[in-house]
Image (cartoon, rainbow over all chains, first blue to last red):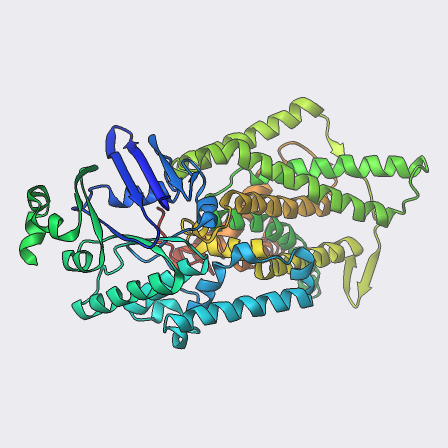
Length: 256
Length: 307
């Protein structure tokens, strides 16, 4: 059974068809790439899958359950995590606190516990603190736990955002341009990082990227969107030579 | 000097009303970036609810169906009114704002104004034009501290306001929902990704703000016992000014703004002819905002994005 299956997904913004007849079968453990020029509808697909938009047509099936039209928090709880192209962290909070918010669904103490600071609350807070720090340690960012996010280097902020997504214990992680604004060296490090978290957390990863080298090196299968249509699909080697893709990407291909 | 000390208590009393109501504006703004212009009328409806609850309880007590002392009636009235008022706020959210969640903020704000007018006229239609007198729940006692006279009601108002603000602080800083409220106030869109149900948090925010307005309504009704359907308009606008003065969306700012407004008003009234009170008082507010356009504790929200 595929982890995620999308059938005939179509989305209109008023009179604009942002995504048309998008199909996908994602097997557990895969790293899948979604590429395409600016405005191709890639982020729209992510917004549809995570419930931020309700699709005009089509079905989204996650772990055998139809999640079409479900609300974002329900989908998040079912096991789809996500990061954003332009980081969406709570920049004035510490890295640790950002991650702790993601443990929300696990908080069990009620009003009384909160107001009277009962032992149950203290223990639970301690457990969450411990788990969040552990997660940061696993990702090699624990030394930044008490830093306010806005003061952290960009690459570390990216990792904090991924850590926050991992804290919700997802099965599927959607990464929207994880290397945006990164140097080539940082980009290579991010590739290793993504491979590492896939292993460690038993994840399936679906990512949007612009940098061809990155997608080609990381993904087993790539889908190409242009003006909301899937224009090509296949393993990296094929995609690289695909005439439609070269046409759509003309400017950017030369650069690489 | 004695005059000034005397006025200090008046300022604190009015500051308490403004602050309690301003909190409702700020809390909603902080998570939805929406000015809930129906909030003054939520205060009005809550005061009427308080009136009916108090009259009802006093009636039961006088029939000796319930052996309630006056203090017990006051406490019960306060709790019941806050509880019922929260549903008024929730109703406004469900009917007026939720369907417009993705509409431009201006549409939602105008809808709020209309809901306010609806509530005023609905109360007018239901209860007629005759004014209601809020019952005397606590017999007035005047304490004399040196040259200053203070009523027990002023002290009660002040104590209640600070007590409720402290509880609100605990709620926001310690509970799960409070944490989600804080997270939403900084970045609204990513909150559901943490598995947090956004609508639940929004409902709680409206409920809390309206409960505080309900408490303000009881305290106000006991001090100024004549109720009419338009009583929420001016005090609502002034509390809104207090929220802006303190800084849009800032909880602490709403409290400071409320008391500051109380002080400015009372001090102007104490030193100048009373007809000039609001003219001068709000000129001062305008001047403050000229130099601090985001209010005293407001931040520039330009960085806050929506999906």
